[in-house]
Image 1 (cartoon, rainbow, N blue to C red):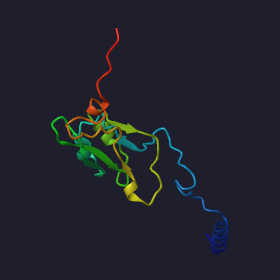
Image 2 (cartoon, helix red, strand yellow):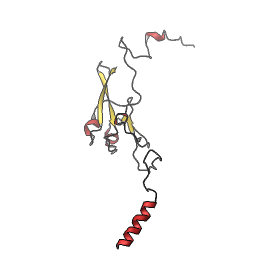
Image 3 (cartoon, rainbow, N blue to C red):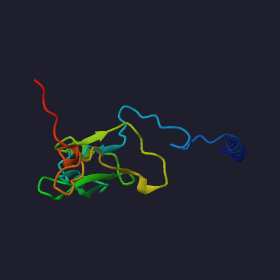
Length: 151
């Protein structure tokens, strides 16, 4: 290209609006059918085997201990928490989970500068164990006696 052609192209580009869009701020993405969105664990299905955490290629899954939730032996339960800021959305955790405890969504990660808010917390956490070894709500002394059954 000659100098006048380059200058002409430069001036025409300076007068145009930018082609790029502000992802997530002004417009939402248009996911394809192969789009892998946010995912999180259904704690009711999770057996806390840590396989997802061990196999994660980007080390984005942390096994977080919930001391208020106990297993049948009285030990605190651990559930996976996904750090989306490190996740590469390969869904290896979804594929490797022996109980199929991961819930996948087509929802894209939110556009934010707050890295700490980009976490996939477990869903359907069991009720905390109260002081008598009973789970809160079901079968506790606060509910009173069961209603008699009719004939």
